[in-house]
Length: 160
Image 1 (tube, rainbow, N blue to C red):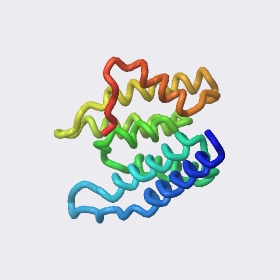
Image 2: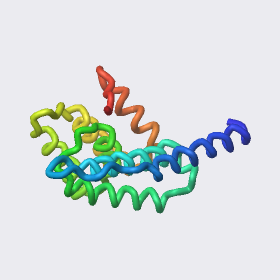
Image 3: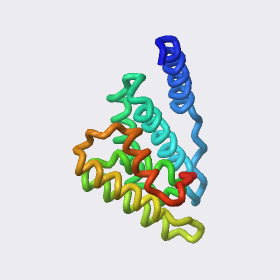
Image 4: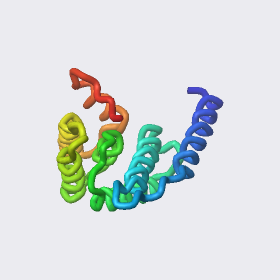
């Protein structure tokens, strides 16, 4: 990648980061699903993924860790999370047994819902990620780790 291409890519990442940070969240429904919290988890997962997939090109390590901490706090109190993407992305960030338990609990709560689809593949992928993290001591690059784990699937996950 040339210097000009890298600068253009970095500018594009800055725009994506700004768009994700400035998203307006819907209000909480009366007596219904807390869409605001669910959308906030999704937004935080997008920001974490953007930073990790770009190898921290925007130099936001501290901000990304704040996003991760905030997302886990929301996940712990969220009833369910029907979207696979944030569960997977944030699950990839789970470093402690406590954080992994939060992810597994939100998966279990989500699967108990009448209209939810199975998050079995997400659970299996996360367990493989966690095993890789333990074996590799976190030395594998983010994109390589995700590519390797997902390439093991016979059917590619959609994460929608």
